Length: 414
Image (cartoon, helix red, strand yellow):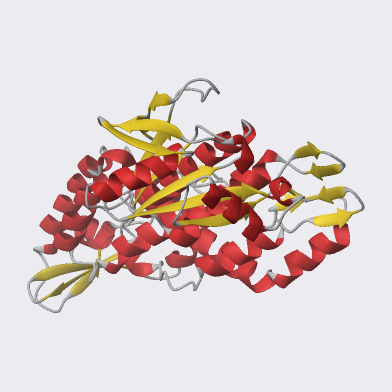
């Protein structure tokens, strides 16, 4: 199903016009409705969602709003109420534009459209801009969700017409793709800083209600950080020895948690909201998306066999959007050396890499961390080679795992 999204203004301000799409003409009051009809005429199923700023409901109910649009000739649509900003008559809506963007972004996350259009031709300027920004954040989220797999299946477009004038009846609608780029970087996310404001007690209540969600998120973020650095800095054995990817962070729970901070407070003629940090909220969900992609890769692994490590990680490093292709050369060098040393082992035998290289003269390094990252994580004193069924399996041994974990969490720390 194709989705179409639009923020609308007051229905009484719209009149039926002719909108032209690919040579076909449709008479309706909304360009988005013309697109829905056009897609259905092509045999495609399309769903129209209209975002209604809450300020439009001061003098009417949502049902009355819907009925007014139907009177204008628009049918078969759903409505979603979103926050407003500004003063309308006696009512003042205090808050930030980020509350609008975040509300729309969360709607995208709950519905997960695979192909969608956003009509940016109507509504007070702050609303179509918020719609466009929310769409871009959603697309970034979906790209991160399949980043390690090189997967990018979601398609999104803007729809718009020239400014609608009272004495002009015919308009050629234009459709343009929306493009975003997602990079392999760790999102700067803080689950503890969703919003700020004067109502400290209410903020504390909301944060306390999400205590368990926040605890799981922080654990997930730490594991993602280790995985991210293991990939970026070429330490593949971490995926077999340290990372488990069993943190139960449920996306719908996080959405519900964030929505709590969007709830309004009404005092007299003032409707107020917390100042939501929409960029941080997006980063929270980017973290979840990237974690999901990394977990999918981790689930494809089986045993730390030299050949599997080479096959899986060399392919990973070649994924275009990761920008870490040079890792493949260093991994190839180190694995070829390990395979050569592994030939000295008999079936079922195991030995520390350093002893295979230096024999009884082997001495542990005084610069372990440097050597760890310089040799694909295969530190000579902590990497064990085992021959099993003709394969060379690799493990970390001794007291090194805890120290390696710290290195991967804070690689730049001395």
